[in-house]
Length: 101
Image (tube, rainbow, N blue to C red):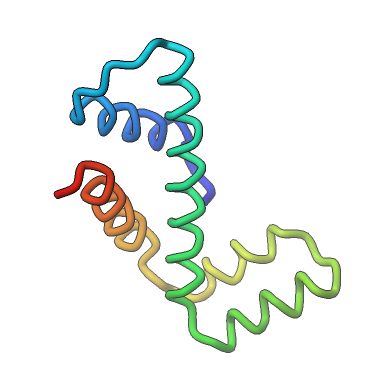
């Protein structure tokens, strides 16, 4: 996703804290990095999955022809999907899965 990775990192740190996991600083940093990467990948997948099939085809064709990855976000912006709602839902699901709730 485009946007503030610091916000995702803070979100993940709060999840780890909520779980009352006692970790040394290095392990916590590595866990945070891995979780942010997983969350980012899931958000990106959920956004792409929300696109109409013809727009996914457009992205695939653009990427296959060597266009910049920025084309993905141009298509997403043009699609009119509610990215914020998708991101929020994905973050809630991610938190629930991690905390087992």
